[in-house]
Length: 443
Ligand SMILES: *[C@@H]1O[C@H](CO)[C@@H](O)[C@H](O)[C@H]1NC(C)=O
Ligand SMILES: *[C@@H]1O[C@H](CO)[C@@H](O)[C@H](O)[C@H]1NC(C)=O
Ligand SMILES: *[C@@H]1O[C@H](CO)[C@@H](O)[C@H](O)[C@H]1NC(C)=O
Ligand SMILES: *[C@@H]1O[C@H](CO)[C@@H](O)[C@H](O)[C@H]1NC(C)=O
Ligand SMILES: *[C@@H]1O[C@H](CO)[C@@H](O)[C@H](O)[C@H]1NC(C)=O
Image (cartoon, rainbow, N blue to C red; front, side):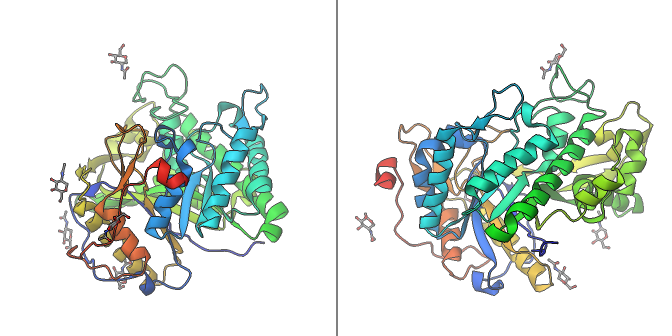
C-alpha cells in the first residue's frame, strides 16, 4: 500500500471577484505556512492553443520565473499536437513524436528553472475513443513511462465532477452529450438521465486503474504521487431552516461525495443512491475495493460560494437528471469581472483566500499546496476571452501576443519571494517589470 500524501488541497483561485468578501484576511507571508507547503500557478486549459502556448512555452516559463514559482501545473492532452494520434480506429493510437518532443522540452525547461511540473492526464478533452477504462490506463501508462522520471505529481482527471455533469447531462462541454429537456444545448445524442452517472462511474474506475498501475509499476522507482481533481464550491443555506441546511449538505454530497465517498469509502453517498435509484450504477465488490483508497491526494478547484435552497418538489418530476435528483434551488452569488491591469479586487480575493487556507492549516488540515488560476488570460471554455483570469494580460491584438503583468502578478510574486502581504492591499508594489515578448523569452 502506498504512503498516503494525504489531502492535497489545491485551490485554483480565479480572477473573478466575489461580491461578498471573505472575512478574516490578515497579514501573512509564505513562511507562516509549514515547510514544504508549495505555491504554484496553473497554466491555462484549452486557451493555451489560442495563446499560442505551443510556440511560446518558454515565455510561460519566463513568466513563472518572474513570479518566483515553485510549481507550474498543466494538462497533457490539450495542446495542439496531442500525445496520441487518436485517429486509430481502436483508439490505441501511437505516440505522436511532435507532441512527445513538445512535452519533453516543456518539462525539461521547467525543471531547469527550478519549477516543478504538475501534470493532468485528462483535461476536458478525452478523445471519444479513449472513453474506456482500459484505454485510459494504457494512455496513462505511456505518460508515466515517458515523463515519469521527471514528473512527480499526476492528476488523472481535471474537475471529474464537472466533466461528468457538463459533458453528459447539460451538454455544454465536450463531448456535448445531453437529452431533452435537460441539456443547455439541443444535443443530437446522449441521455441526461443516465450518462452523467455512467461517465462518473467510468471515470472512477479509470482513475483507480491508472492509479493502481502507477503504484504497482512506477511509484517505487519514480517516487511520485497521483490523485484526482474536483471542482468544489461552498454551499451556503439560503435560510437557517433545517431543510435548507440539509439541502446545502446534499449539494456537497452530490458535487464532492459523488467522487470522494467512492474513493474513501468504496461507495456513493446514500442520498445519491436514494434520489437517483437505479440510474446510479453500483459497484461490484471488486470494483469498490479497487476504487477505495486509490489516491495519494485530492485536488480541489475553488471559485466561489453559492446559496442553495431546498426544493423537494424536484423529486416528483419524471424523468429526472442529476440536477433534478439534487432537489435544490440555486441562489447564486453575484460575481464581477475585472480585467483591469490594476486588478486590486483580484489581489483582495487572493489575500482573503490564502489567509483562510492558512487558517485551515493552523487548524490542523493536511493541505499541501495552493495553485492560483491562472497564469495568463486564457480562453475559457464557457466564457471566451472575457473572463481575464490571468495574473498576466495577453495582448491578443499584438502579433507577438505580448504578456503584461497585472498588479496581482506583482502581488503574488512578492508573496512567493517571501514578502509579507497585508490585508488592506496598501502594499507598495515595486520592482522593475516589463512585458515579455517572444523575442526576449526565446533568447
Ligand atoms: C433549440 O431548439 C429550439 C427549437 O428548435 C430553438 O428554439 C432553440 O433556440 C434551440 N437552442 C439552441 C441553444 O440551439
Ligand atoms: C442564520 O443564523 C445565524 C446565526 O444566528 C445568523 O447570523 C444569520 O444571519 C442567519 N442567516 C439567515 C439567512 O437568516
Ligand atoms: C476593476 O478594478 C479597478 C480597481 O479597483 C477599478 O478601478 C475598475 O473600475 C474595475 N473595473 C471593472 C470593469 O469593474
Ligand atoms: C479554525 O478553528 C476555529 C476554532 O475552532 C474556527 O472558529 C475557525 O472557523 C476555523 N477556521 C477555519 C478556516 O477552518
Ligand atoms: C527597468 O528596466 C529597464 C530595462 O531593463 C531599464 O532601462 C530601467 O532603467 C529599469 N528601471 C529601474 C527603475 O530600475
